[in-house]
Image (cartoon, rainbow, N blue to C red; front, side, top):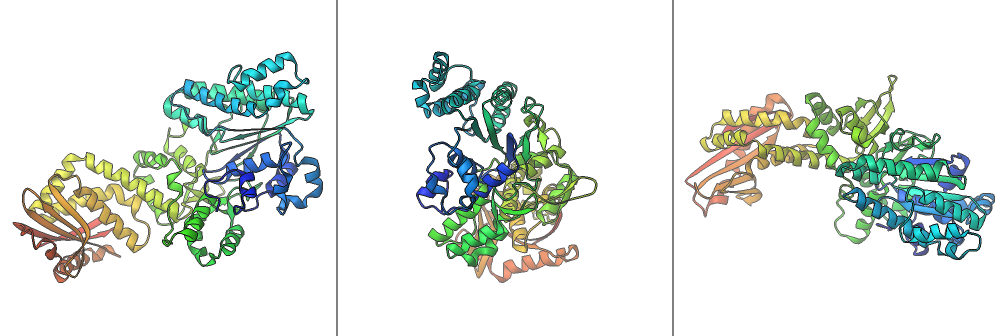
Length: 550
């Protein structure tokens, strides 16, 4: 499995497994556009496809790496285009400096490295002394940064007598970083000029392809370009070339003897709708297959969370009103919400209001769409189990932080525990449930019980001089939570249930209390001999709970 390998030539020459996406070349040429922009979430194969395009078009390419792939069947197209063009390929994902000066230095490093790959230009008689001087400066990161790609295009055209293909991967990465670090306006100006020179006023350009996550507002970046051709998550054209289709996943699993895991892969990593296609996140599928082939643990993991910036979900949670919280709760339960999607945003617009954040969550892959309504809005939902897990984790972490900041509320909660005041404890929990459960009420019964368990444990953990044990073996089973006051020598055991109906709360709370006695959970404290020992049975149903104490 090519885990972390995004170089097409390396995958082909070193015999990594490759899902054939070369059909993109034919469709791209047939649906001609001088400037083509593809927007997809992180880890959807953007960089690998850009590497594939470079390998196909670049003069001097190893043509054998395309043998046996779908594009090789297009004989006339290969004769006309394969290895026939000078190609400038640049990625901007490493332009992430904390200041504008640092970001420009990183961009210069990219330009200098590209120029260094064309060292033969500096010795060519086809270039004028002026061009050679400009070229030598580019090789050491000096000169006119904004015009650098156009300058390289002109020199390559003079050398080869052919127009140039420009590939720009992760075009919006510098903009995101600039917004986060406070130098957004000068970065917008730099990128606008760089693209203006290279992609509009460039008579040496054959065509160009850009990839990114966001479709940044035309007014801020693409104002100098004439109608770039857009391929977004909502467009039918080229919808299958980024990510894996269901047929491709089935074949991948079958080729590797993993067909029995299809349902797991489908539930965890499928669910994205791109145009009219149903798409899997390729990063997740490849990683999980690697895990299945090399690891005895077959439990699916959340691979996407480790490579994506998940802070947007916490921002969403902080800004959400009660209506939005209920809508998130609906998403967590597998239902859809109807929202308008704004595809063109500047980075400064993204968190201005809740409606924009819905659009950001969609564009970045945390939500997907299932259909479009007559009023122009879209039916949005969480695509799969992996993303649902990210929502749960991020929002739960945010909620626990908010709880720890609520000193007064926690003191009331602790006082209710110490006195065994069931009603006061119930009131405290209902207060916190009203703020949190609309986010987290979805999932299986096991998921629900885990959430409420985590909520109560999170309320307890900030308490100083207390020791807490969760799901620890005791008596004839495992108690949910056992706590011991190191100074006061008091102890408590909490057992929790999730009720199927509101009317069952009281009976389920009593059953939780009876379970403590029946399963002899008190034995966990047999050596410590606490001064007092209280049992708490708690039952939850959505935003409500019932508490019994003994």
